[in-house]
Amino acid sequence: MKKKAKPPVELPRSRPPLERMIRIHQAIQSGKYPNGSTLARELEVSTKSIQRDLEFMRDRLNLPLEYSAAHVGFHYTESVDSFPTLQISEGELVSLLIAEKALQQYRGTNFEKPLLSALRKLQDAMPDTFSLSFADWEQTISFRTSAEPILNLEIFDALAKATAGRKQIRFNYRKPGRAESEPRLVDPYHLANINGEWFLFAHDQARKDIRTFAPARISAVELTGKTFARPQKFSVEKRLRDSFGVHSGEGEFEVVLRFSEFAADYIREKKWHASQQLRELDSGGSELRLKLSSLVEVQRWVLGWGGHATVVQPPELIESVRRAAEALLKTCAE
Image 1: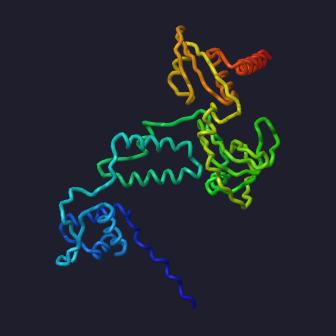
Image 2: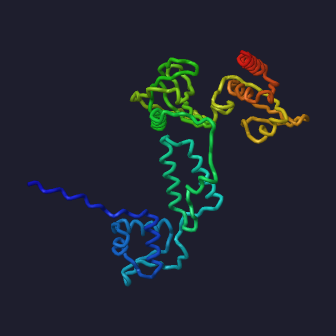
Image 3: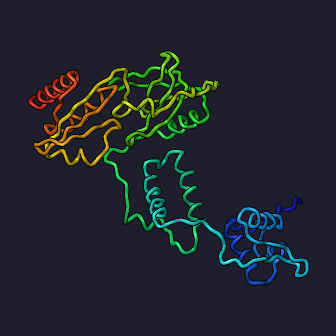
């Protein structure tokens, strides 16, 4: 007869290192001269773990820790008021909590787990004087967007891993307004979240240039088995420096826009572009000057203000806004 296999022995769950070291500190402070063996039994870990904790307390936390042969245990050679833990101000705590709320835009992506893990570790390292509960902040602070991007998480994860690993990929891409997709072979340089939207910046092998792709229009991602070296001169910040969003062009446009008194307050409340210059008008409105390399996105932005925004220059923007407004009027009339 076959002997029944014994069920696996469940080992005691080890306490986090910080919690163990605080318990060790308390035992030493009590004057009991604890040693490695007694601490290991009490904390249900190996003596090697206790030894590493003691070395960390002495060498990294600079605690005056010594072993006493006479008492066969450890003690402090100087007075220690409290165990050194993470020091955090009230302002830093609030910022941390707000950052946790801002994770909403990463829900479901492969960034969510490591970000939450990092925040939890910070939470565990905080002094007992702080009562930190992320759940309590659900009713006090929130982040909301009216148009949440719809992501295929498998596609997004494949893009993120290829970008981080500098691995060449091929995929099918559908341009806006087109029903058919076309194959692309690219070196993915950077994934960026711009104004709540995700974009992939990649070197397109066929076009011999950097192109911007929306992950929502990417399908059938495959690794080619090749790796690449990202050029040191590549920088998303430099590439988008003169864009109004994600589109960058080869042109140089001095854009001048005037806003009505109604819209002026909204314009004053934000920094719309690094190059902006704002001038107050006698009418109560505002004049906004921008230096851009493309007019694609600023045209849509101007149209969104309706009759409260007027294009002063350049002529190309005046004409494109006029044509778009006429088309809209014609559509409404029909």
